[in-house]
Image (cartoon, rainbow, N blue to C red; front, side):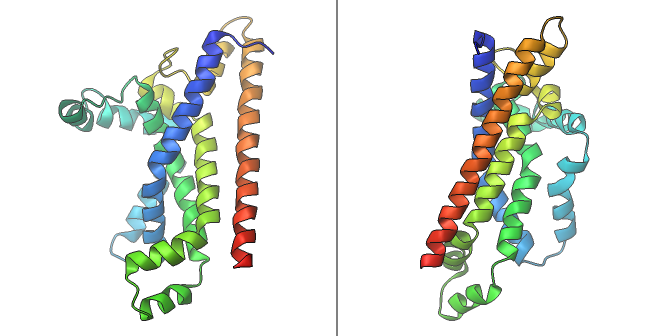
Length: 230
């Protein structure tokens, strides 16, 4: 199977975008998941709704909202460009942002379920022994939630890898800059004789997703095995 230079660029860009989106969203997802799982506060239902909103909104709407807020004329985009020189619109960083937003609900949900499955008595016991909340989280909650964190990260990576609607709306489909595997497949379907290229990239996408899922399963099993040996 021979790939064209544009296809190789699209594959590499997809991996870079998906990795950046996953790593950037993971710390915030852990914090939000812990907040939703362990704390009751005014506005919790609203926060939960906002977190899961990208799942129910059409991806094009999410992409358009990102364009309004983070575009060159958007308030957040203008502020970031002026103070830090960061530009999202029509850049690969914008594709990563769109993918992170779309994948965020899946990451939060997986981590939240993992935290909720942890017996609160373990955390309470550590607190009664004088451990501060940050120490309890770092030494009890976080290690026990690692399988869920891994699952969330892999789900987020897979979602980011296949994201299309929000990405193409926010950053368009620019070869070499924002054209990922998904948008490249779309381009192939719009031209006569593009079936071969679309099939090649589809097979690559399936292969990457399967490798990621199997790696996640192996890591989760290894972590659980080590935890049971302790």
